[in-house]
View 1 (cartoon, rainbow, N blue to C red):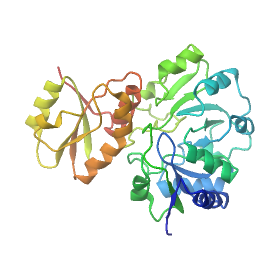
View 2: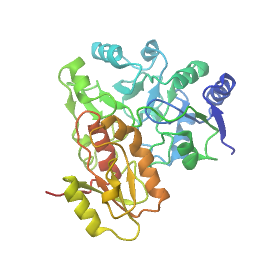
View 3: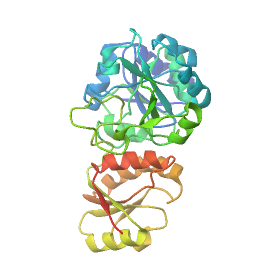
View 4: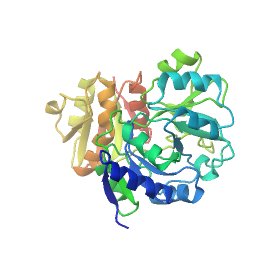
Length: 340
């Protein structure tokens, strides 16, 4: 199939994408987090096509995207007071809430769970598409399963050209990492995936919010995936990524003494000149927002320079940096080398 490249600023292109979605097709759509691969969330056959295009395991649930808060009422059994508080604080925006699902949600969306993940994105093109289609959209990241998530329409085409009907080009994503996922189907609420809305922000609204052990550790053997992004190896380039936890001097000395053919460094801005291997930078050391915006593009650039071994600077797991760390340890398969 030929994948159409549509323009988010063109209303006729938005209508074209909306018709594809109503007809059961797949469209790559821009959001403030990453590009999503969207289908009609109420059509199990259309949703199943997402898994086929991505090569995504069917036990990995999807997020349903809405364009108005009132749309949540048909999708869940109960909108709890906690859900209303979080929505008032952070919707539209990069936050997903998990609640018990209504009967209208196909099993393909929820991966057989009795819950559903809902998000109200702030990206104007995403809202325009959902409004024009007149349906909620199920949308995981628009990449091949396991690859770094896409933050541009070009990234989507690199992975899925010829596999989906269209991609809507809305420019680079502003946040750059997938949404924060918090489940309200447990007591207390639990952070399942960190993102642009931090754990501290969730706690400022809800009080107690626990952090699931899978945020920082591999999912336990046999455990069911209750949120996207909890799989063991994820967001990964072709190279073997090893995180180096330590000072820059310790990192520099290790990289410069272990460099070889097809070795590269994933480092912070301003550090490349002191490293004896090819480098890709992913933001300033103290700028967690920039790290989030740059990480996935940086991981893709490592493939472009044909890196086979990558030594990565370890992000600080606080604030939005927790989300950066969460993505990078999964890209590295939890391989972390601690240096003094």
